[in-house]
Length: 487
Ligand code: NAD
Image 1 (cartoon, rainbow, N blue to C red):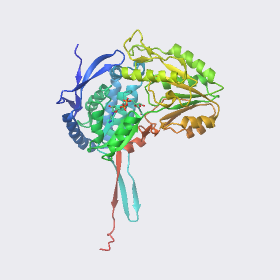
Image 2 (image 1 turned 135 degrees about the vertical axis):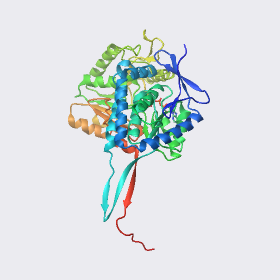
Image 3 (image 1 turned 120 degrees about the horizontal axis):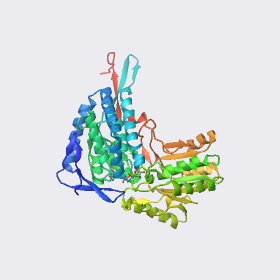
Image 4 (image 1 turned 45 degrees about the horizontal axis):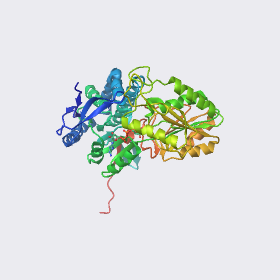
């Protein structure tokens, strides 16, 4: 059976490359190649820049309310096509249908809707200075590049294009080479909704195509989602032409469970924050610090629920709540971390092996895995694993656990479970992380800014402030009297 070949999406349509080079995309739950994608060669790259220049000229000349109206049409189409788009995400990523069906498209559409609503409300300032005055204009940046990770492909494309387009920019988006289809579907939807050709272009390929985007002098900004190490390369390359950057990077986030917490709720949060999307979520609370008074109760309930309530298998089965990891290579990496945890003396509470469910025997599954009695200096406690692997640690002192939680170069997210309202806020204010939850974990509404402290990121996505990251301020001074000049 021949598989489809997708071309790059430039200037409102698919465009064939000249080299004929392609790459294959595999369904992680079946180990089968499902389609091929043409790599953006020099011809495509040049065409993308020309297209985005034209797109920018047309789009930035429209009023914010016109742009808003068009983007809201795209939102409506995204919602109408929810199930088809969710299926694309399941086949590309291996994540469970029960998640994609209600989260991936929905949270992407929400963000475009949010920024479409905000676009007409963005205003400049005006101030008198004596008889003269100045005013400011919020102008778009120009051509912005988006580079995405593979865990939430369509959502990431929406989160980057929503504010960029609302502010009047053009975008060249490069999805992850593991999951390239969602962004193409979004590009088609933008065209159908009336976004002018050239405003949202999709180029395909791996690191080399990303490097071209980060180095290209016609591009004013790069918004990147991916690993910390890649983020450093992207930022270094963007520095060559002093591009603005937004960096949404990795994490190793702590969840602190105090002895007055509702333990069952804390177990729910820990499981969500480690096993949802089979652990491939940047904000996951992979370091769970539990107070010694509730430690045994916590791990007993965690073990029971992990062993009884998780169903791995064909991700399209609506009953399945644990999908396949993105690739064989990633499965091996995650299993390697589990081996390291065992070697370094952590106690395996449950899981620890590759899985081969009857309904998806060739998929890249890993059992939901919990290590207990972990120590702060173990590799599994220090490094991002990006799989279903949780490390549980014990604590007995508030100040001490805050210091331990902060002892990392990462700072994406953090959580606290306690019924003591003063402790909740006191502790969360001291945690060095950009996205924090109290008696909750993982919720990320369009209204709430998200981004990392320390090496987990730069800038924010979502929330009002993000619109500022896609505009620049022009100040205009207006003289109302004769110029005073010594010449
Ligand atoms: P990755 O860094 O390997 O790749 C991300 C993207 O960068 C891909 O599109 C890739 O092709 C591209 N790329 C690779 N090398 C490049 C280079 N030198 N220049 C430009 N582009 C390059 O990350 P991944 O494996 O796709 O995603 C997993 C990582 O993403 C995890 O670390 C996770 O924590 C992080 N992540 C962060 C967030 C967030 O919002 N903070 C969200 C999702 C994922």
